[in-house]
Length: 422
Image 1 (cartoon, rainbow, N blue to C red):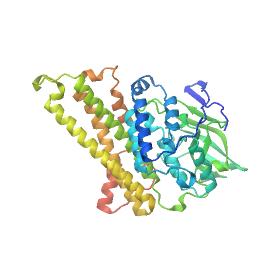
Image 2 (tube, rainbow, N blue to C red):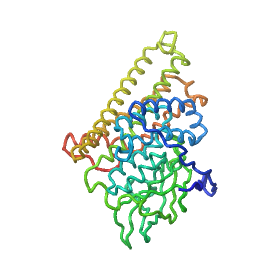
Image 3 (tube, rainbow, N blue to C red):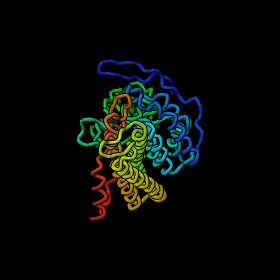
Image 4 (tube, rainbow, N blue to C red):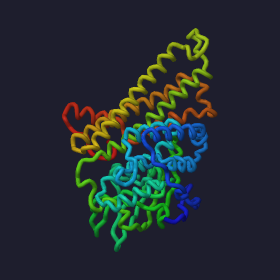
């Protein structure tokens, strides 16, 4: 790969060329479980103080992402047979939760990277697997170009790929491309076109400097503001056959826990948001809030109704975190023997955890202002970022369908569907 710049469009009609994305300068260290958790805590401590300013001014965390991947935390899932540590998803989920508590935008950026690496494990072409796993161990990052706007559902795609000699060519437009702006490779979900027919789904791994690839920084959501989850345009982009995953079929049609793996990272982000919101609630009530006039106490922290609500939030947070850990362990168990039953068990466990983390993220970020009082809404504190982040991120996939999947299994023995959103 060269170091030619990635094309960034900052506003409609306003094209700008971004500085070259630095290639990895050093090979990240391989981390064991204790090292991974220690590295995650250290990184979280380093980025926490700047989270409010990055959100307020929408400062993209370019330097922070470089530090994140250089720590070795982006290579945790690389299989041992390819030189990686192959740590369990229980550990990776906790890493994302820890980082997301400090800054959930940064915590969200690698989740598509991890999800793609899991998908890569099922690719039958060992040479292709080895090539890309080697890149990860060298510090390369994978982004995401999955969803599109204007299609019937999230699983409908118009972006096409077709073979041209020994290469493949892509055309299309993607949105919600979290991580693409910070990536060295952008995995693009496409429909294969053979003549006039549309065949199966392929993923093309597009180098960030490929001619015709344009990343548009047009993410304007009021939450998760620095994920750069905007548009990727592909204008006749050419990639070698080696960069097309799924040519031989993925997992041979076997059940796979890809969906639960993708979903548990989402739950971990929400759990992190909730934890930080509660921590900021406690700090503000202790240090700044005034007691309500009818409480008859000297400090807001002695208000009995505030005490009860804080206690309730803490209990629900710990319950959600326990469900998250349980779900991760069930995912790890399913990986040892992926059957229809084990994959369904993993999907249901993750659905329960996602429901719990969604509810506590909304509750904790909403009650922050009720308990901390009007002063907590002042712009200088930027505490509203917790609620904005929770509200936006929990929309990633509707939690009402998590409850449906759990209930339908209990009542009717119906396994949940197999896709990326359950």
